[in-house]
Amino acid sequence: MNTIDKYLIKRFFASFFFMLMAVLVIVWVVDMVEKLEDFMNKKPGLYETIFDYYVNLLLYYGNMFAPICVFLAVIFFTSQMAQRTELVCLLSGGVSFYRVFLPYIFVSVILAGASFVLKGYIVPRATSERLDFEYKFTNKRKVSRDRDIHKKVAADKKTFTDTYVYMTYFDHKRKEAFGFTMEKMQRGAMIGKLKAERAVWTDSLEKWELKDVTIRTLNGEKENIQKVAKIDTTFNLKPGDIFIIEQKSETMNNAELNDYIVLEEMRGSEILEDLYIEKNRRYADPIALIILTIIGYAMSTRKSRGGTALQIGLGVVISVVYIAMLLLGTLFISDVFPAWLAVWLPNIIFFPFSLLLMRLAPK
Image (cartoon, rainbow, N blue to C red; front, top):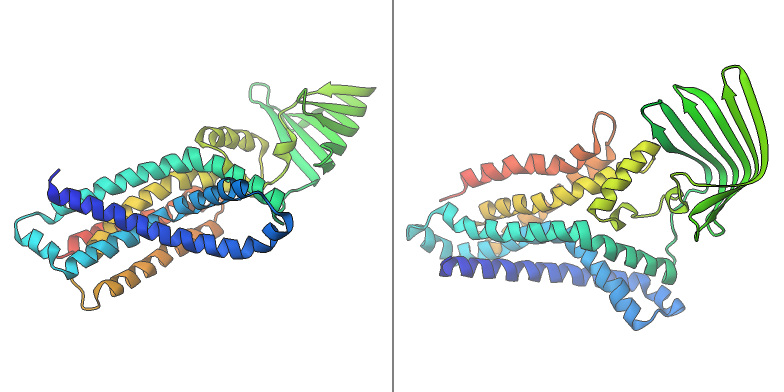
């Protein structure tokens, strides 16, 4: 690593953190204005407000906007170097165009790796703490579904037997279900059915207590009906699995998310789409950071009459296009257009575009 490499790496990091701080200041000001009334009414402690909320909030948004900040940072300091003919001196001095690019790739890979670790292991915990603060001290409410709940709780592939649970209503405060039904199906035919007036969750035992139970067992044409006052039972469903909690997928680390996806696939959950999107974004966003670095470098090495301002403007336009493609892609998710394709589509399109720009860049 020579002096030029160290200079470029230093400029890259300095410009990136400058852009990131600028974005985070805007996020902080906007959020403070929005939450000020809640804070005045509920008066959270200073330590909780700073460390449980704002540190975690800025960590979340900082990681989210990192690819865009990297892109703008590369354009910012590289176009400055081009305007001051620093790049021209390097290239005319015999330094290869691609050799100058090596420090850029070096920094972008480091930032991409940091982004992956943050997104997969640190930000989920921070998001969980932030949401707990918001539920406690702001008007934010958990988005939940408490009526007509239908879940698959078991699947035996050897015997082709599936078990389903249905609840007419679930009281999340008392952790009590009404109109509880459990059905066991084998090859599409019902082989057993359990009905209970109430099902109460016990935290200490992690069990369901079923009350006023009717058990119906089918064996061919024979049917056996049994009534029981109370049964303690367990099945693959907890109160926390019943609700569609906002940003639930973003509060899990990679291992927890993968396990939860397997579980929800078995249940046939309606939140699978969100889980697939979150899983793929944890891999796609770090890759996007590297791709946008390539595009930024290729765009800004040319000396422009409009100067740095024009190139920053073009960078903002490309950033908006990238975000718009990501958002539009998630709107069209279907059986034909899966979640992974929606998330990876901007990278799939922008990667060959980045290679084309590198090829066309003046050398």
